[in-house]
Image (cartoon, rainbow, N blue to C red; front, side):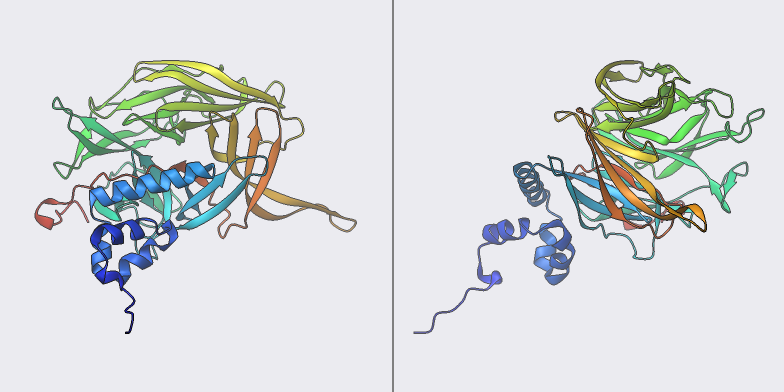
Length: 406
């Protein structure tokens, strides 16, 4: 009697779901393209919840942290293990956008990504990497916009509003803020995109302070920025919140260290619930401080020092982005470094630039991981939260795209 080997199609649905849910993240694209039925699994909220739970359980077992990183204008999922011998691994390029599309900025909010295109300022895209859903949105042109490398230069924020029935809806803030370019007579213009109405609306608001676009965080559905003084080269001295429900800015909120006392300042978030601030003191040049909020609201903030270390033996600091492990009291700093060489003919010379990660512990130990050489030296590595989400991206009504959206 011949024994028949069962095929996947003959297995119970529950068992097939269990098998497919264990497929590694970097193989899901291939699985979804293999079988229509398997692809349908990824559109099911219950299946995705099961898959996300398994991913999180597996990550906890090996002490893994997963982050979204932007390298060379592409978006990847990265595994980072923080222990005595830290390591990183790219789990795969996140692929839901056309291959030729390059991303210049990413903004994360509750599992969704707002992606700003590198070579096209006529549209933007909101993306759920877990579900593979996207929504293309056409932008509007503002005649007073600054131009940067041949393109109009806008700043963005991404968050959620909440109505009186506790229903939440994503919104996008887009604006021009020329305080740093035209200090005497700055241009200022703000607009907001509402997913429900599928339209842009101009807002009559202004924070009256220069907003630092490379210090932007999503916390509890609202956006926080570092803001500077009105002087052209004034440092970051405060943070400010934009409330997406009220569509208004809050008051200036203090940082734990006074302006001008820190050579380097950078902001990050912990689980989109707390803000962390990294400072390098300018009066000593060898002290690194990490602070974290104990309370953060649109109108109020309080801070506590997480740890302070001596960095005299660490080459600091060429970085744009970082995150912390609050329990282990470790800062993971993404940046770049150049090889320095010396020869008798040319003296001191600078060689290739590398993407690096500095893993800095409370004990002052710093371990450097080299990620590789950049394809474009203008692109800095950027890290943001990875929160797998089953949030559905609302599509244009009737499946039709209005004139304002792609």
